[in-house]
Length: 348
View: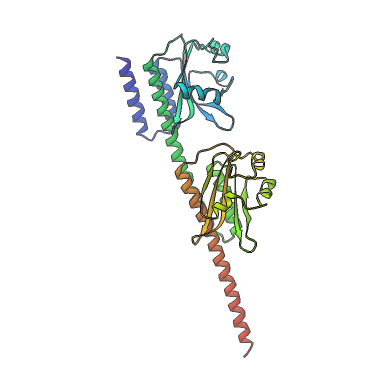
């Protein structure tokens, strides 16, 4: 059996797994296992980036001891740049190559050579797939391409799982919000639940909602989650450019709030640990009545479906405010009518 046949059979097996109800963990383990068996390696590991700590952490592995895996985490920045430039990193002698660290640990683990390729999603490197051999090896072009193809399959599995989880979370968030709106006319409670739930669902650092006070022309804080009192007080000083544009109906994504020219109080942003943010208008009856801001403590990309969801959630918040306002107006009208009736009865 030729190596090309082995590659073909491996991808047939992985494709079949994708066509079943296999979960992310099962698929990633299959990719790692396939790399070892097809390329006759000693071990393999798929690492994913932890954005907050800038390290790669093992998600699926076979053939490596726990001691070796946790001896020294892989620094993401040091690996991503050369990987993006070359497309792979090959180390025929992993126990002496100056580009690598922990030579003694590799020797003790029985590792001779190492091949690392990127795991990418939407042209962004989110992890690495590494193959380890027990004897010295010069990796051939077809072996490098095969491992890269396996890493691509890992990226697809991860992205598919993320999309599925996001859809499930979004559905649950909408269901919970709708339930809150229908079960309570306490607008403060509804908006507070919205800020907390949206942070939990999207993994955001914080969120706040400000509504326009027509008497003063300022934005009044109605609800917040995950933000310090000092930061909230600073944001109440004046209407910022982002708020002004949101009040005109524009949704904005700020990729790096620490450098963006539209952000006025960069010192407060940095002190709060905020990097990326979304600013969304809140509408009621086609009128912008406030602003919702979402804050992330890591630089993030926000997919189109996420943007649609947060805009829809802001609209639901506007509907909740509208419903509560209508109820209060009806209550006031009812009270006024009852007072009129009693005053007329006094004439008889």
